[in-house]
Length: 432
Image (cartoon, rainbow, N blue to C red; front, side, top):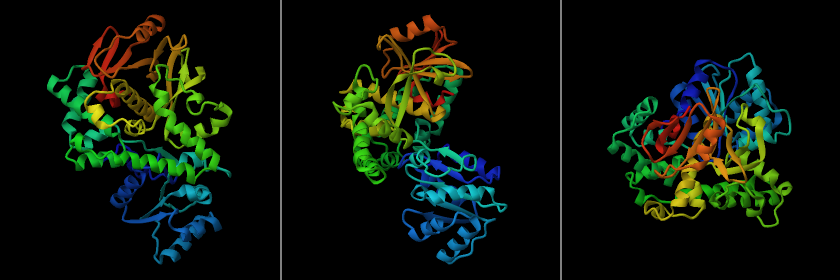
């Protein structure tokens, strides 16, 4: 399945940048797959090293961080010659060796043109908690997220529909009703299964029949996330990590979605759980959305203490909330359908900006789901799960702050009315 990030890899190769390439992202987002495809297609020779499985290679990095010695030792362990001009080396699960990460600095500074790419689960956590000096400025870091709706349509062969969506977005003209309904149907299928590559492959394998989708796929991914918490943290922290993660459906199910530690555990205090919250954010398992009361640039300078937390993938959120796909298809849980759509919008905006903001005043009396800096203007973004677009909050915000324009995401077709860009949910990825 083609990923948009592949272009970044091609740019890295074209620029012949000596910095090793590091791909960061949550488990199961497809890091290993995309890097393997890149190495096989774009280079004459390719060596794959998994530091979690290959203790003999891991030992090399523990003894030295110097590139020449590392390569010579790898040659002896693998019993093969490495032509560094024609060979790319992919170091997977690099997070298990801090020395291996440190060595990237010396690969970058070497006179020889080493070609190194690396990836690993929880690399974000490793970077945040690096005990020695992280090679800042010596590594090209990219982030891989679950597949968005654009990538989903590409994976299921709907390139023509994808192109039409983009055209209508740029012109802000409505789609044909038949195409609009088709796009919505596929979008709601996608919202149910999520953007994890394994889930999309399962959907394709079942001939795009949502009724036949095996939901165990998402449950297995959630189980692997919980297992990572236990594997890479102290016992008490892993327990707290899991409690926060499992509380997300309840946090988002409230009318006021502000994160509350009391929903994690009745007696929970911020100082006890802050470290776990930061661990989950760094792992890319959850996304933090900061509250803004004064919508000015730079938004980060006006953040409040309150915030919302979204899950990294709406399909995982639905599975974690124990909402069956059949409920979603039958529209028996419209409240949570709206939450899943909002969670998806958070995913898309986060992937574009790496930060999320929302506006709220008056203890939730007025709230706009997201704020985004677009070409120097602070643009409010409201999310609706249906075609009911009545909103006192957005109207109040517009009257008070007079933004250049506003964005409303809903199931309605494209339109531009009264300073509001109406964007169908399936076109969220088009927002730049």
